[in-house]
Image (cartoon, rainbow, N blue to C red; front, side, top):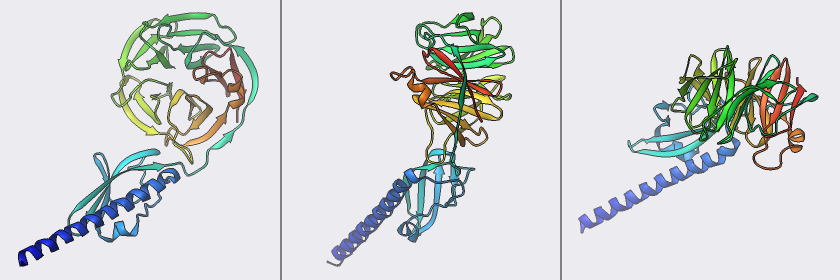
Length: 340
């Protein structure tokens, strides 16, 4: 009889402990979900619920192979945008509870609303499904996408007749492109490789594989030291210009209230990265040191003239002095706009 009472007592104790653990994890989950849309900024404390803290000897946050022991949004561990983490609650009795979570980190300062004025219009070939777009001198270098018709071409601004062009194999879907010295670098969408061309003739010189961390090829630019690539996520990847298969670093892009994914065509100018966001009529101005969106152009009015579906969207950024050139996939016009 005494043994039965003891076993019953132990069972009730175990059940109470399990229920308490569930309450702790539920509270932590509810707190994390409530904070996802609100987000955090670098330096903010993570103010966990009292019942989570009450029986905890220690709480850590795991980031794969890294672990944070203080409940602060530390930029040495967190990136802008969404961070997949695991909370580890080490209880006073030594038991460990774990809870997966997404912690969104946003830029502290609201992005500026940047203005523009159209100062000139130039013709653009409506056959061009613009993926990469750059001006050097008075020559446009454009990467034209779509399977079966992808190519790299160049033409004089104001004309639509190619000076030179090189077609890709039928299975290739061309993506972003940029210039380094006497070479043009071009990405492909899903084939995990890029091409390098002679700038003068656009003859193919070589190919390179992407770093494994890059899922696809979307946008590409050059900051004078690194190639900077996008892959349709919120990330910018800084690649070794002498060996683009090697990644130097990557960072994520966010504004004051949202993380921006589907980053597409890129352009580097005067210390900032400018980025299209796929299927949105905006261009972001990004601090490449932090990933913070410091400004945003709204090209809704221009895009509405040419966008009739999901494909013919704003996509194409280049610079003509301090003026910006913008165009889109299959658009008939390149716009030159003055900007702040």
